[in-house]
Image 1 (spheres, one colour):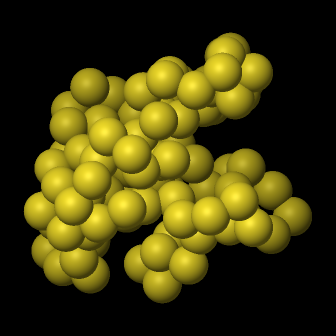
Image 2: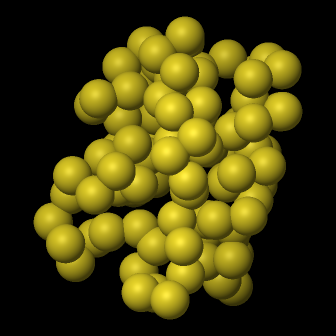
Length: 92
C-alpha cells in the first residue's frame, strides 16, 4: 500500500482494487465494514479508520478507474498512509 503499483498488485487472495467497481473492490468492502466483522479494518478498536470523506474519495477514485493520477496522490494515498500503512507494510 506504500505505492500505487503495490496497491494495484493485490494480494495472494486476489485484487484489492477492481478499477471501475468500488462495490466489489476488497479495499471498500473492508473499510466500509461489509466483510465479516473479524476482517473489519482497522482491526484495533481504538484506531480510527478512514473518515466518511476519505471513504467517499477512495470510492470515487475506484469508480473513476483507479488511475495513478492526482486523485490518488492528493486524496487516496495520504488516507491510506494515515489509516492503513502501520499494519499493511513489511514488518507491520
